[in-house]
Image (cartoon, rainbow, N blue to C red):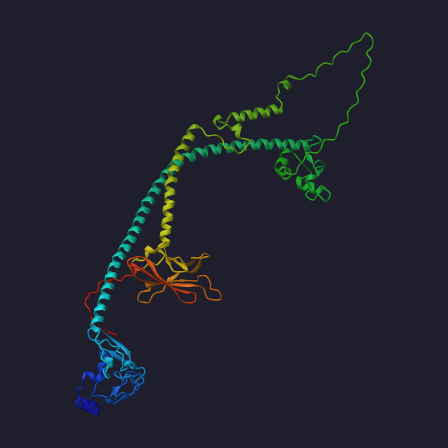
Length: 526
């Protein structure tokens, strides 16, 4: 029973001898990372890695914790915060909590954490290395295939933008040509129309002047009750409808203000009075005339007979003198006859209907109409393309990655089906939760921003400010991208209340660096 203790004591003595001789075996430094071996020099005192204290080297791995960071016991379980390094030759070196050392469980694939126990640990590092190699090769192949699709997406995005820009230039050139032809055709049309418009307006102005003069004469004659060719205060004062202050008397001063004098002649009436009173003026009702009683004819004497009275004589000048009305009609007739018959002036002069154009003007209008129709046809296309370009500019305003690798997401929606809900994310727009059993869909977020890590922000996007949870915060969704051959959502969860997380596979997230790695296994130390 004492034999094992004696052996251990002998080994310990040999170890001390080796330490004293300045030569230490690797086993004395179990649990130390290769990168930190230079800190553990047997011939020098050991300084804790947190610089909290310096101790004799003999205190290293003596199964007593001296350093606060546990760095003096890398190969024992003495320090609760210590870390033991598994070298795992042929595989990946790892760090485990030091209290796993000597606990009877093989944590290192090479079994080095159980060096003080009788537990036999099978070395699984080779198997793990093979499995890791297979996984890395599968990952590399996945990224390689995904990168190929990613390049197609980028090339397609570039081609579409280039084609749209080319088409836009072509259509812009077409519309410039059409605008030039339209202007050339409209110039003579406008000239001819302007000529007819000017003539029509001139004739209408003349007619309006004639009508106005007639109204002025008629009103003046109506007011000039005593026939002295003047309108006086007394004559105008009878028309109380012209009194602006109808509650009071229509005074002489008020009438004089309208006339501008005690009386006015026709010319002054035309220039100063007519426009003031024309809208309110009303003719006075004519007083009723008594019906004269018939006068009895005298009894003719016997033998006499009635001799008819001679007709009123009219001088030759009066007979040949046309009436005022006849003069006006004659003047209008001459005035109208000066207008080309193609204008049909008498038909339109009394209303606002423009005159009909002559054949030459109609021909110019037809030419201009044809040019306008061609222009409008092309302009319709231009408006359509401009709308497309406007949409493209809006899309260009969206950050679709350094090379536009996420441009395939524009205007695309993707669903993920689970037991109770369908989750639908419309990229760069919004995300919804749709109940399968009926009921209203719920917006769980609107596109907000890319939110990935600093080294690659395009690995995650955020949808925020969704519908507010009952007695809770607004809903939100985080979409995390990972490499895949297709665009598809593969998982949706709610890790915390009203905060949703989606995993989305896409070629756009595949990494050229991973795709280009070699398939040879390498030793990696953490």
